[in-house]
Length: 103
Image (tube, rainbow, N blue to C red; front, side, top):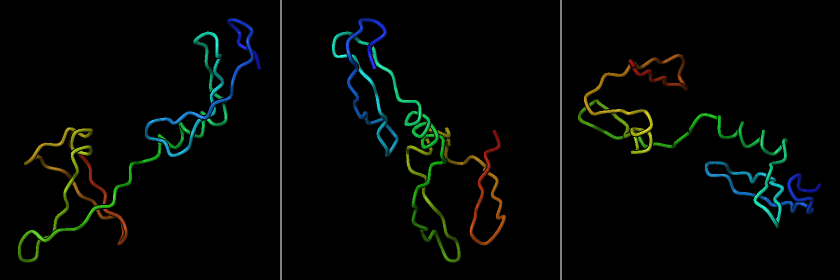
């Protein structure tokens, strides 16, 4: 494959995408700043980045018969959570807890 700008043969390079575990295949021109991504690997990365965030958390004891969990700073920042706010909790089955924000 050649560069559409300058006609030089493109180099195939595996590129690390932030937030993705797989690397995307990129075609880059060594002469000019042109680059493109292979369609299949780009679609895989997009699907991976769309997948829901999963974080392992420990259940903590608050007092007597009460338990709780901490939300890490990335979760609180991305959802704009503040201490004292109300959230709605649903338990659809014995393996899932669903939290819904009122906003």
